[in-house]
Image (cartoon, rainbow, N blue to C red; front, top):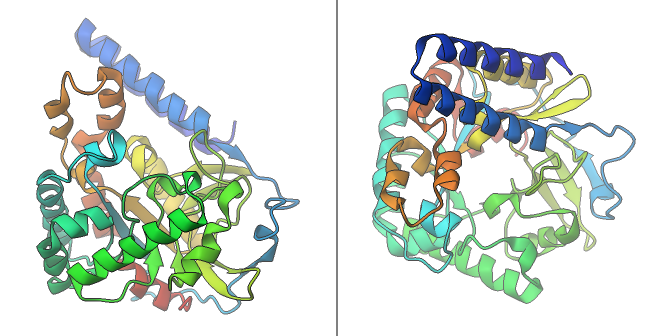
Length: 351
């Protein structure tokens, strides 16, 4: 395999050998279980780059790169740190569950890290969170962070028809704008659920007043993504003549393979040295780095509260890597110039 995947495997094998020599039998089995989950993430997600075309969908054929993208000066923002604000149980287990105080406490954990690192970020806020805790959004605005939309209900967009999606987006925009007092212009779909079969959702986004989208995951995985989609920021020409700027989260392209490195389990599980190498490679390819995460990832013990309510393997899969997540984020934020989504796009001359 390519060098990057080899580094993953070698690093993990070394980790397991150390655990096998120095740990108890129980710890060895835990480490072995972690290895299988990590390899599952990457065997599921490493995609071959198809250079001939992106996809056969007519909208995708109208994609074109931004013409005047410029590499920012050394003292300007190169990377954007974004947070998808949602409550874990409601967004992952039961869409009808209430939004709880956990989301507020977890956002406070995020703010502590950002303050310590002197970084302003962008919070893509779910409408139901804004509706339940409007003062949370007011606090984010007061502290100088940006707020954008992460949908309303966290239901997959590909399960909606046009009427349902319009209603979802209208509620998403209105709840966030009412709570924050600022205009919302950018959107990120829950779980990247704009796929090849519902690219028409981009039309509806423009109809509802959105100008920027960050919903398309530019490689195919088992759960989401579009194979061969452009990994860099680009404008999409829609059938009605309108345009929308698509800014995907960061994917590392190495020797024809695509590696997801920007967030979620990929960000938590990837060896630190490989993550740093990937980010430097993305910047060298003249693309802004777009990192995403969730407030609940800053709370390593939250899922312990759901023992007996959620299957143990799913809890383990969702919690793996959280114990070192904050240290990883802090190191990254101190190494590179991170900032708000809008400010980074301005620095790269994208808006």
